[in-house]
Length: 162
Length: 434
Image (cartoon, rainbow over all chains, first blue to last red; front, side, top):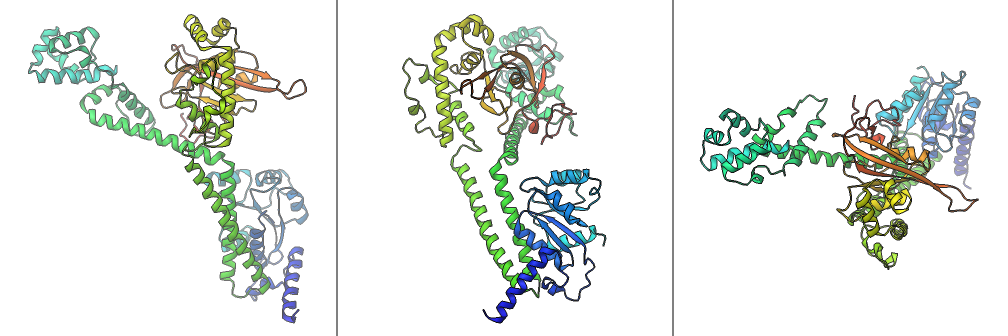
């Protein structure tokens, strides 16, 4: 294997390992924004999304913005993941295998320790009634798919307090 | 009375045609000219005796003045007026006859527009129901939105990020490729599904709707099965265009088998005699023929067209899913999803073997009343160890007279305008009444 390819492969593997560990402090994902002030360094976001490519894109965007990103790919076990990761903000898809986002929101708001956790709901159904239903279930913010990259980053920054 | 509206206009037209003065005609029939003037302008109704006198004086047949073909026009206009209830416009319903008399063209136009609105509303309701309840459409659209979301986000990252690690770039390129394949497959499946629906030429059809369309052609009466030696079931459904799907043909064969069993148990001639003798009360018919209630329901709903009262019949299984629908005029049946939980059909489902008779009022622009008979019976086709299978049926007949106290029901929650219904399970897509 040529040295530069080996280097590339190593970099990718390192990114994957660091992503999984939720540590992007020196990850090359952040290369494009090198020098930018990472105000959100260390803020933790948990992403509950069953579509791997969507999760990957959001993970990239947020990691580049300085967030520590963890993810969980199904409704089942979501509550355990939330308690384990103790995120500052939760990004929650509504249509998930196992349990729906509505059920997860219901459990979340009924748990005193998690009732105040800011939750950004992502949904493929963006009608007014879907927004209203998500808000009623306890969503802090609602965003319809497909979303604009800059908007999801800005919204999460806002939700995390700046 | 609808009759009097055009009657007045016709009286005036005929009088002018023969050059008779209003005062002369009034004198001839023994009323004042002022009263005749009111009649001619459709502001007073014409009694039968006066109508006969007017016809005589004008030298025409009574029927020529009192033709009743315009009743549909009045019905349409009243429906239009009812549709505006609660809106800004306040149609002068009390002067509807005058309106028709003075502006027959505009009145016909308004009634036609109202009919068109009704048709379009039903289409919207059906499409809405389909969108809400069709699992394939929902899954397909979700797949499309997911692929588009991923594509858009990933493509934006690639387009907007100047420096990106080559390994990440490669990964995102791969994702874009995979998502584009997924999107094209989802879109193709969606188009194929919609095309198949279109090609079947049965509209928004399910197998059950295909069977109903086939039965509707013969007004739900299968004459061939009434014979002593009926043809093979297969030959009855061969080449029937309505039965486009295999599932529909299978349902049709099951219907034929049951129809034949009913026809053998209650032959048409004997059933006609019993009907003439005891009338359409299913309990009396069951008593007279020795058959079960459910079988009597089905035979009443399978009489040749024009025989017996206009009936509707619905059946459901233990889940409440409608398995058979023969519509009765004015009794709205949902095309998809479950019906109104207040239907006596479901009461019967909850109380097997108990005959239930209930007068009901079906919600609608012009609420209509019906007399319903419902009954459910459990069967055990799997023997002692098999599951119990329950079927409920409800016969729908026109209500004989207004008695008050009718049960208020609707078609199904999504298309029911009744406000404040305690049994409502989901909001209506129509404006709810106070």
